[in-house]
Length: 381
Image (tube, rainbow, N blue to C red; front, side):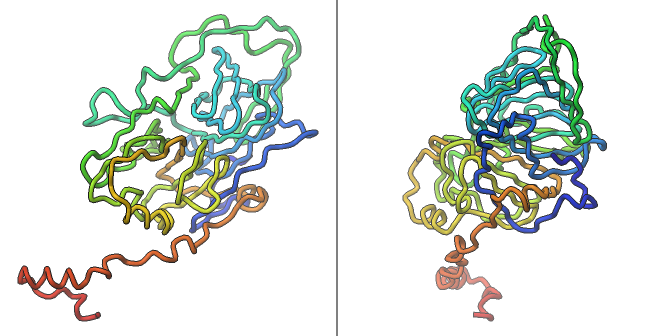
């Protein structure tokens, strides 16, 4: 675990280039690793004592928590199972969460994680100083993207259990153990809205262009978390799931671009062509702000030569993005000890050429027809 992502910390590192990780290994028997023991921090920003920032973790577990509960005093957890369901018991009740669903457990709430399907793996985004909310819909009006009615919360559920329990608290990135003589899951009833919730991402209402060009990727935002700066999110959680693509006269994949946001991307299931070599469910990809990135040449070639008929994209898959306005640092584990790090293979872009150069004769002819002064590039050809 890591919680301090300031560059002064020798255990975190900056990366100016794209990074990628092959699927992280799940512990194997005879080692018994539960959800808490299997937490591995990959990247983050800030520090929980500053009450602003975030962390990105993997959980890699092969054992259920027994008489043991976890309480994160540092921030809110957004958990994305990738392999195997999570049977989560909270002080408010139980939630069964499968791959394709997200669950949010807020700061200060006790919970335990059981693994009904055996070994499990998934992604976590932790917020230190904010809470997730639904994004403003603007011109969309009342409905679209993630609708409030599709979020689910637990019903009160309590146990009568006077056996010994251990409660593990996470505070400032460190773990502390507390023993007690009864279960923490003995809440008979609850009220209010500070409560864990889950959401099935297949219910997301996708929005896109029905004429031409692209809409800003914010249309894929499921949840957002405000920062202390007005109109600047600390974090956005976006998904790219099955939908129609119908734009005409358009390069349909994401443009080759540089943007201010830091992007951390994972794949829950299915395939996503052209993202990087070896991009698989359970792995990850990372770009710091203003780092150029885009799809491979093979994807570019398909997108520029195929007939632009209405088509289904992302069929049978969900890719997600943790996007932040903050710069992140990468942990020692992610950079040196996971054994899964690799840089994107630059040859995947080698055949990309400036397409404008293929049309200079047409541009010159159009300029002459329009009686426009010769463009400046004419002098350097």
